Amino acid sequence: MTDDLPWRVRGLRGATTVDRNTPDAIIEATRELLDAMVRRNGVRAEDVASAWFTTTRDLDAEFPAAAARRWLGWEHVALLCGHEMDVPGALPYCLRILLHVNTTRRQDEIQHVYLHGATVLRPDVAGAETDA
Image 1 (cartoon, rainbow, N blue to C red):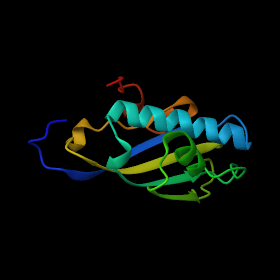
Image 2: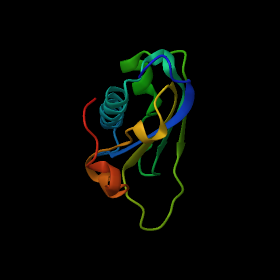
Image 3: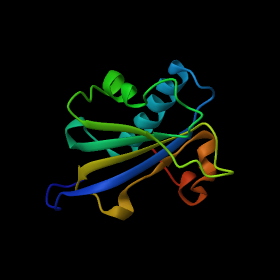
Image 4: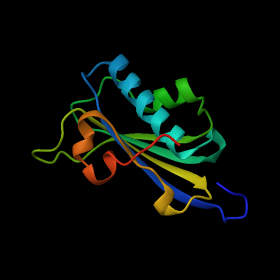
């Protein structure tokens, strides 16, 4: 990122699957996904405007936002959790995150992150991420 480019709010997507419906499994999957999203996109805590976490209805043992507060220290970031639509045939045990970040990156420079079983959701970008 360079300082001469204009700052914009960009959406940064990520998804992963969780092994089981337990608080520890949900926190660990969220932590892993957030870490990859933040690292690959050079996101600093002060650049995050808000985050929206969703899970499929089979994941209800813990709020994913708890991982952002606990592991990243996002006490002052607006965080929201909810459930995805219950569409027949949808990927089970799926956790999704939408970050709204202030950045100078262009949209085509944003690296969306899809891990584990969630790579089937966006195979066009799942294998394209590199560590930045």
